[in-house]
Image (cartoon, rainbow, N blue to C red; front, side, top):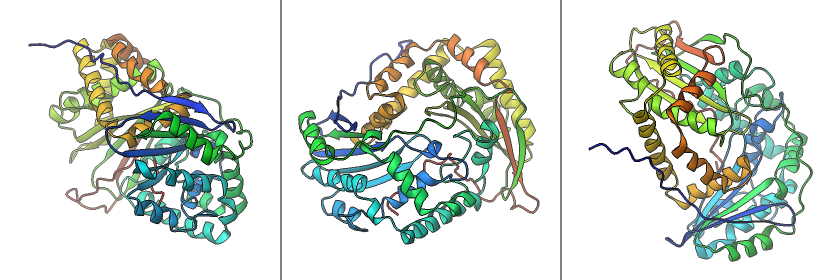
Length: 453
């Protein structure tokens, strides 16, 4: 029996939104299934809001804001939340910084009080000593996660090649070592005062709380804080299509197997083309029957693993392919095999069944990723921050049911053109360990999730 029914059943997360007088946006998603509430505070500031020479500032601020505020000194944040059975953390990425807590519903006012304190009363506690301590923590983190890790610098170099100097997605969220060294106390104070304000924040409640109660609590804890200064304009205009050029490099590293990284800039998150590219990414590498898995692993026996990704980013999206070679396979051979698959999609298209299967797998992952109130709170906050309103999340979900094979073909032809992307081949440096060593570095482009260290 063949089921050709498209997964049109809608994913719906009803919300109520309001804006406080100081510009802070409030979103409430009520779910009474369990007596817990996820509180998610997202600021529209990430590494793309930094400037060349001061990279890593947003992530460093995230560290600093876990060091205590005027009424909740260092150590109290975790201690108070743990006493009521709560959890918390934070992270920094290209377009946003978030702080989040999950608590029993009767204790929902505690995270609001704590977040209010570091939003409104953090600067009096920010000292040079605190900066030096956290600067050292972040620099050590960079050494461990990037510089001294197999394949650890690959994504950093790939984004430099793809976007070029000065583009806000060209540098890593953790920042460059030299830039971290030169960040001053005035830099940190100025960055905090500009971006960590009610007018640049979205507060999401998800779980065992009603909209009226959430609105009243938001007003009580944040309504009297000042809006904050105007946000500076972006330092770089949206540029989804870097100029055509051959961008290819080889990097030597202490690894056992060559690995090929390829990336292309695409339309931003939430657009119809972005959704078609997401379906393409699944169609190419999700599951044993996907095109790259077949061509490189099952039939071609060229790679031991291959994967694709698509960043839901604001200035532009980023789609990538990563493949690790089998023993004795040259990176050029991998590149050629990947190119053949992409060219075939662009020239000959894909089938209805491939698109249907990919959309179903996307929906599988979307449902899984939104199973908890914590994940729903983050997704709603991200949609409000990057797409302008939380309801946009449902509109993005709905677009998947409309994707056609021709849209996937056109997306591959237009955005994964050979001369628009960047290719980095990481190869074993002379004297690297034998190929049976475990050197499988995990190298996302810096969702620095490390708040309460």
